Amino acid sequence: MTQTDPEWFQTSVAALTQHQTLRVWSVIVTLFGDLALGTDSRVSGALMSRILEPAGLRPEAIRVALHRLRGEGWITSQRRGRTSHYALTRFGVEQSEAASPRIYSRAQPALTTCHVAVLPPMSQADRTEAETPLLEAGYSALGSGVYFGTVAPPENPDLFCIGAFADDMHLPGWLRNQLGTPSRIAAYRQLEAALDLVAEQLPKTGLTPLQTASLRVLIVHDWRRVLLSHADLPDSFFPDNWPGGRCRAKVMDLLDRLPRPALDLLEEDLTRQAA
Amino acid sequence: MTQTDPEWFQTSVAALTQHQTLRVWSVIVTLFGDLALGTDSRVSGALMSRILEPAGLRPEAIRVALHRLRGEGWITSQRRGRTSHYALTRFGVEQSEAASPRIYSRAQPALTTCHVAVLPPMSQADRTEAETPLLEAGYSALGSGVYFGTVAPPENPDLFCIGAFADDMHLPGWLRNQLGTPSRIAAYRQLEAALDLVAEQLPKTGLTPLQTASLRVLIVHDWRRVLLSHADLPDSFFPDNWPGGRCRAKVMDLLDRLPRPALDLLEEDLTRQAA
Image 1 (cartoon, rainbow over the protein chains, first blue to last red):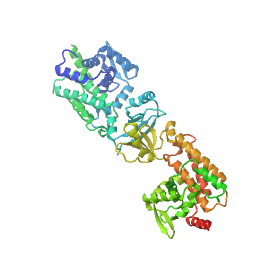
Image 2 (image 1 turned 90 degrees about the vertical axis):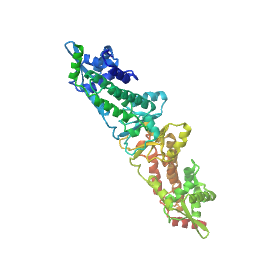
Image 3 (image 1 turned 45 degrees about the horizontal axis):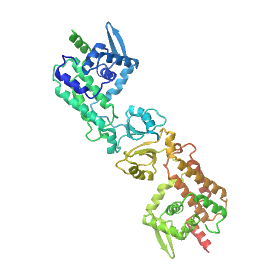
Image 4 (image 1 turned 60 degrees about the vertical axis):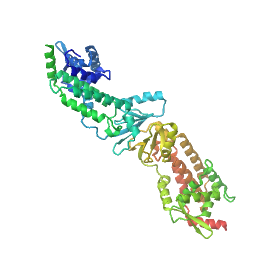
């Protein structure tokens, strides 16, 4: 947080970051996905630092994360004079584009194919290991060794999986509670409180492109983190009073009030501030 | 067993009955289904006793079972002179006809719709109670609170069920072992040994209609008991070397060698023997 940021901005950033330790590489992925989604969309290291600095991310941590993302094939870097510029690779663009529809959709997901995956009887320790790829693929445990997901399960020759279109499926209350667990509801509630605060504090005019970018990245990152922690399902699959739909509406409202700034505008803003 | 029955017959009946305590009402249901499947197909009490006597079923036990079957709406009785005659009701015919295709089919079942049903997390004691209707509907436990079946599950608002056509479904070995449990394999092996013995002992000619009827009822009853203890699935759903298909072929071979005797022929045979 720089001294020159106004109080409303500092309060908003604090609200959006207070309940979590930001994973730097994940925030950078969000930044590219939101502001620079294309192999030609180059972001200077200085701009990246400036956008992420209000959230408390230090340039060293950003450099480490960029190194890792380059190693994993997500980004490329190019040196121009004294500064490096970064862009998504084709792979990075594909990964971001795969997540985008879910993150930026204004509507709840349509009915989908549901899968129930069953592991063989095994010890608790073996099951903890065997279920990890399922949970990482967005599956939710329904009981011991039984999982519910909306995508084809990860390859495992011991897994029995049955999938069907979710039309007309009876969804008992306990199932909806397993899909929308209390901890997921709590995460949405925290996000909602932060979104409400930002919405209240946000001035109608006078934001700099850099302030807009910082807020967008943090809002999308928080939304993405909570959203991608559970299966992509219509609200009817979750408990009554599920906050998912409300949060979606509030995220989209804020993003509408914070129109995506073009990269050249951001670099200009940066130069102006440095001058 | 009457003194006048030949040894091959006594040995065959012993082989078909040695591994179980026959449930009289269930044997009577088999008898109607095999020999008198129609509301006009009347069986005298005397004939029924004579067919079931070799298996060790006493007239008193038969009377009690007939009383129960009448009370449950399966059969009606009609008195003609000194003897009562029994026939299936419309309901009894429907119940028998529902089971017949599976029992008398010469081929393994076609691919079918599979259902996985999941009970909510609960104590072992509650689960034992909650799963009873599922097991009675032919569902097999895949794990704690997870069941596999081929028919729609019994009504239970707490049950989550997903069903899909079994085409292309990956069937891991442990699943096939849960569907074809060792105790089911053992039951088939015992049946197969009895069928082999009967096939070996059965004379080419000279059987009375009553002997034929007794053997048919016991063979169908044994087959039905083992067959209906598991879900109606193609052999590919069961462990390698599953004896189901072999037993089916042996049952059908024996029934071909023991053509179903008409009821009037049986009543005549009875009168002749009594004379």
